[in-house]
Amino acid sequence: MYFSVHAISQVSCLADLTGKYMHTQGIPVINAEQTADILRHIDVKEAMRLVFTSLAHGQAVQPEQKVVLLPDSRGDFINYFGVDISRQLLGTKISPYLVTEHKPVITAWTLLMSTADGMPLMLCDASLLTTERTAATTALAVELLAPAEAQTLTIFGKGPVARAHLRHALTLRKWKEIRIWSRNSSQESDTLAREDGLPEGLLKVCASAEDAVKDTDVLMLCTSSPIPVIDLKQLTHPCLITSISTNAPGAHEISPRALPEMDVYCDYRQTTPAHAGEMIIAAREADWRSEDIRGDLPELVTGRAARPFYKRHVFFRSLGLGLEDIAIADSVLSYLKKQDN
Image 1 (cartoon, rainbow, N blue to C red):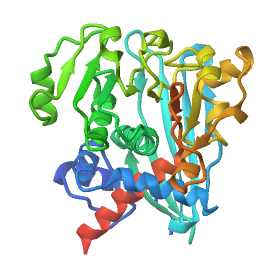
Image 2: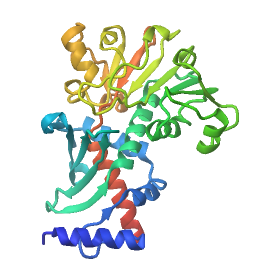
Image 3: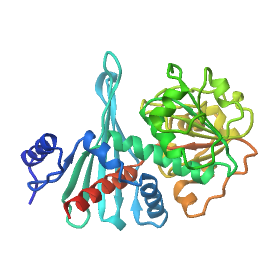
Image 4: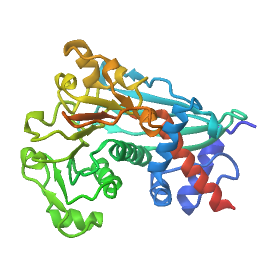
């Protein structure tokens, strides 16, 4: 049978009123509050590792994302697709970027479907899931690319995405200092450390970007800025730089002209160069080609890509994949099934 809109809406109301995951009359519709609870029980980084392993072994298909522009420069919405035959799953996430008089509105919902019978399995608010899978993907890259002896981690940004990156990166190396810098940061180090459950003295809130990146080993850019947030000349020795950027058209957190001078990696070389702002601009203006990418996550998790030697800066660009959304949504669904048993 096909599930009607009425059935989906009814299930959603039941979930909101009871706080339980009821889906006896249709597919489960999971809101943001419920996903926040479920995420505490999911190993997201390992779910991402499986995604890229499936891609490497030809068991998954990752089409390019599709960006649809809204009329009159009112924003866009990005469609993230993916198929993972090893899990018998396909799905899509739709993420609108809506321009308003004030702050842009960004939402996201993921639909999960079965490749066995073509039926829908779950609809979930993907806002928190997107944050977690983005941070976990970056963490996987840091695990695979950062120097083994890395001791100093710097994070640009202090919002939910930056804090998720901090959580996921915390155990990746034996950090002696973690620094945070934001253009509008007013919180003290001890406050942030207490909120994130960090050991005393590990976290430092820096007054300037230059102080934050001095002698750092890993720099995570977790901002919503559409323009560069760091002058790479401020970096005092070669380090790993990770970037997620934002979904504003052409957004980039570093100068595109820096790409030819770095060892560049990405989440998936088949799709990222066509949509990452700095890569598009670098290919057009800076004598850089997508063929210069040294490796992506499918190659890194299977040992097919060479690790960097840190003779110069290393740049990892994550664009976000539909397969990542499918994997984390599948983890949510698997958790729900366990609760039903």
